[in-house]
Image (cartoon, rainbow, N blue to C red; front, side, top):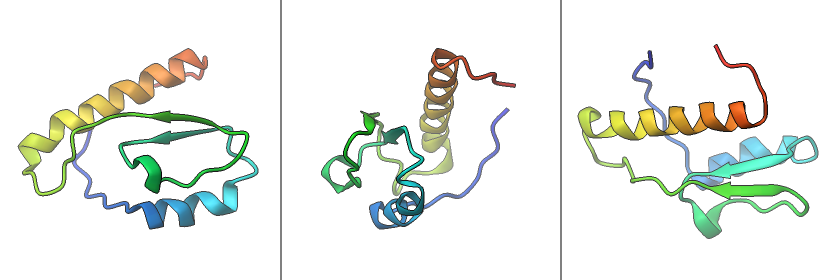
Length: 84
């Protein structure tokens, strides 16, 4: 079961988080940031087109959250990563 957690991640924040790990990153998942996402040569990129949750109420955001959870689970399963 998912828990409602407030999250705000700008492309600038994502770059700050990704930069120290750039040599260890094998794949990058983007969620609609397009050209604003950091690019690292030699990495695999996948962009998940998602509805933008900004400004929507929690009832509208829950299906987006659930979609992300399903995609993450499918990705991990495709990489044979055990998921609880």
